[in-house]
Length: 133
Image 1: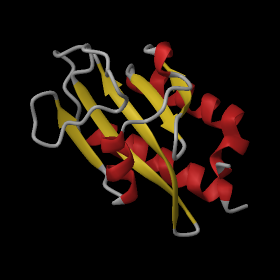
Image 2: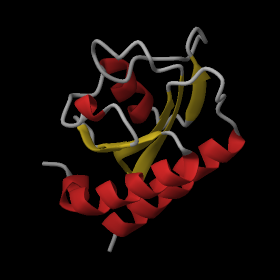
Image 3: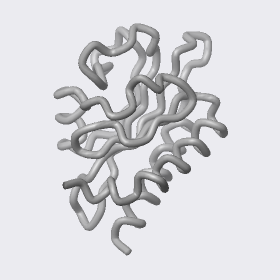
């Protein structure tokens, strides 16, 4: 059982909005799999998250990385080659980690920045608060 799965429809609308604003791929994962995907990479929908992503989420790590960076991780097993940049923020609800919001970029000319990180931090904070209702 995943508390965030109650919000699948809501998470889907949220990632659509983030994707439109950022022009990037936006995703929400619960503790096990991706439950909402927008802006591309639709094949990742419903796929299990990687062990590396699970570990980062458990540590409550918020991070941004580029392919080749030490902290760049596969988000799913057999991660699509085209992912160049990633930003990840865990979703916390009542102190528990219940999932994560991710922003991905496939165009190496569109480097991620602090604004991208703020966008997913706001989304994660909002989704976490919604689950506390």
